Image 1: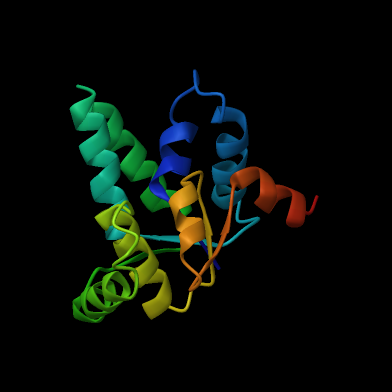
Image 2: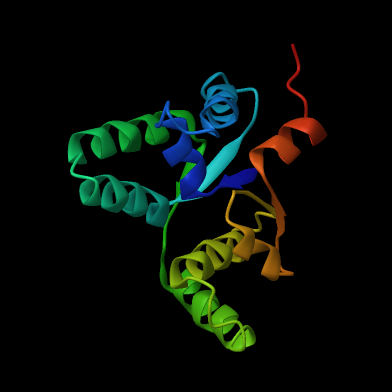
Length: 146
């Protein structure tokens, strides 16, 4: 299983984005059960938050419903994830520029033994605990089966 970061869903929802086509393809593969993906409750929260800040909460709700339909599992942010989150932040104290939300995504992956995250966020490359690929890199390495 692979973990999709929030930005993949955000670009898949934005037809004007230069990343739209590849992110739409990736989420479409998930929708047609060609790949198994997971994400966390934090991703849903981020999608809602970002669309709400853009003044389009309705689109955020629509995208969140789509995410819930296409992914194999929404992973909870529970006590074990929070403990891992604090531990992961402790290991990376010198890298203060990493977003707190990114630490939460990585902690979720560690707890649920997800070894790969698909994202455009280069900060994830700073984590040795998880493999990071862009959607393009993933599609090249894992071409869809026809």
